[in-house]
Length: 324
Length: 283
Image (cartoon, rainbow over the protein chains, first blue to last red):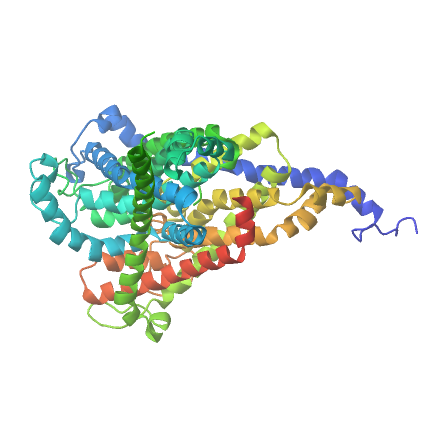
């Protein structure tokens, strides 16, 4: 019974020994290889985009980022209208989404009754799960007509003195794109902010309560000012998502590569030009130019995301992380 | 302190409560509106034909999305073949092995990867798979979705594994089991429900992705007989129909969106309800 001696796991001693000497290192290295695939993927994405855009990079160079003319027929490519559209639509989205989602996060963590909290959280998670293309579908057939008939005329009448709200109303517009992005980033900013607010130590609150503060005062003095940095991180994370949003924006922004003063005018974003024109790009230079657009988009989103992660991680350690 | 000041503070307290509550309602309002319009415009077109028939050419009414529904599940199966093993094993490394320093970087990398716009994934896989294979294919679509799943699955796996009490690991090792078996048979098995939850959520997330499929899976109006050919997917079909000028196609788009959203919502809600205690513990 020396070799047949069973161990607890139902295997022989010999097998357990091989498990330790062979199985352990093999398994460890296997899992390590899978874990570092993250870096492989990041490297791959960067390399492929840079490689894919080499023709455009050598032909246009930095001019690509400063040229505002996008003319595929004459093979003249400049990214400015798309950079402009991406930045403006994301900015509109942030202006709408940031106050709403931080207020919601405050309500969910500090002020709401318990039962309501759970229901609202579930709904917000569901909103985060709505695919971009479904939001775009709703945008085209419900939101844009409503904007054209109600909100935009009202805005023009009320704020028409500003150049932002002048000019003809088509419905599909930079503002519509911004609003749809806002809807998409609301849940992510809300849920990350919520985790940030929750990680504020209870002592902070108790100290403020002990001074006789009301609930709102506790929130303002003890919670919000403590969590400022983390909340900023949540907003930046939302910005990262906003910049890369593709389908819903493509469906409502109008897709016209021009730089207009009015928010009622159609625009175009980096992501949507790739989505729309990639399969139609016939010449090498055209495809390369689209890859360079992708490279610009990747550069910006990765920078923004790295900043967001650093803010979030230095705020509360690695436990706080974005929910998807 | 003057009494008026006190009253003002109390009033402000209530006011802020109301304002933030209104904000919360505004945040979930789009969800309600989307569901309402999907039901209103889509329910009428969700019928037997929708699930069993191929799309009809322009001009003929009726038809369905059978190929796209099957296609979406095929793509998800392919994606799971790539995303689940890599993600779960990577998550095991993060939770069970690894140094503090390296793990920080891997987590950081995974979170950054999560923020890469989906359209960029599509471009990368186009270069990697579509160009060498000289055509759009189901393989390419599955691989792009699988790649997107990796960081998602890795992070959730790590999180649930860390919830397994250390005593389990120590008890297993004390019995003389090799560590890799202790990890697989004790730790992973204990956390299996959580891992499956994470995988399901990741699948629900990539099931609705359209942008990365535009130039990988490409879409197809017919059945896909070969994984090296283009394949239809529900989100692609919704996009194509939504931007088309035909009334019939719009109706199909609404129906497809309703079915897709219900599927995703059911996965999300049931997973969250089933694992409520675990999530409550975590948060």
